[in-house]
Length: 374
Image (cartoon, rainbow, N blue to C red):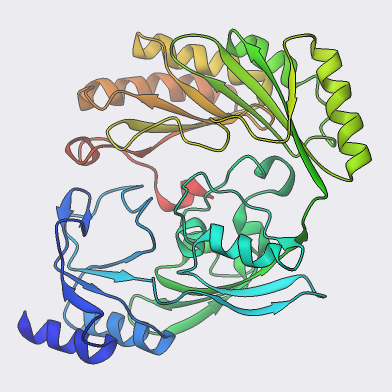
């Protein structure tokens, strides 16, 4: 193993290859080593070394979603993308940018904002990197108007599991993002102008039926996002984001608030729950996707199957939400809940997948495959 570490140090430098520590865990198990390559060539050398030695290598950005999906039996090497950061090229007039995938999304947005532009994505993982976001197509509220992050990728560079550099035309080409195995190193993305004004209209709701009724009253083309927060206990909320021209946004937001009545509030600041997941690492996290009209029936079916109220949060406008099951449930109970829920959704052309769970449960239940995130 010392020979392996020496080889990684030769590739990445003495400060950028080391034995894994307790924080370098995947699925609750410590990896063997961590390498932090600074160039595409170095990434290729690291993955080629891993392939030659039969090692399991996993890419890591901030690590916010490293435990999503089926767990690996063991991870020998974490390839950390922290040094693959920065905006490598920015064509302001053409509204495109090439970005290193170790770049935090919030840092990219801050740099683009200086030129009056943005990438219209808002992943709920606060520390998400561009690569981590693209790897699981992580979407936030803006998906309502702008679609998923994968739809904004013009071109993507990656190094495959054998250490061979390659490119993809994003979702328009092959391999698509869901089919890429290895380490994504950079992405060329399309951009949008920053909106002149953003305003949220929020109103309390008592149940999923009321949330859906109010959500369907919003003109679809007017809203940038329509989100609901339905906690297991207590009143929930529905919020709509308007953004764009100041006069138009002001008129639309004030008009909706008037239509919703005295309980509605207009604010330039998002609600505290907006764009945040309702689950914690100790929870079992579900993603439910159905038509907006079928969302109430789906939420009630989940609560009935679980035998308890369930916290739900996400897009009332698209019918795509996240829900929470206790991480203390035994795997048999979780599997039974999912089977019941899938039967309900089958007739509604919907989908239910488990995206993450505590390590003790993850090996005993069926977690979402890579393609389920796209």
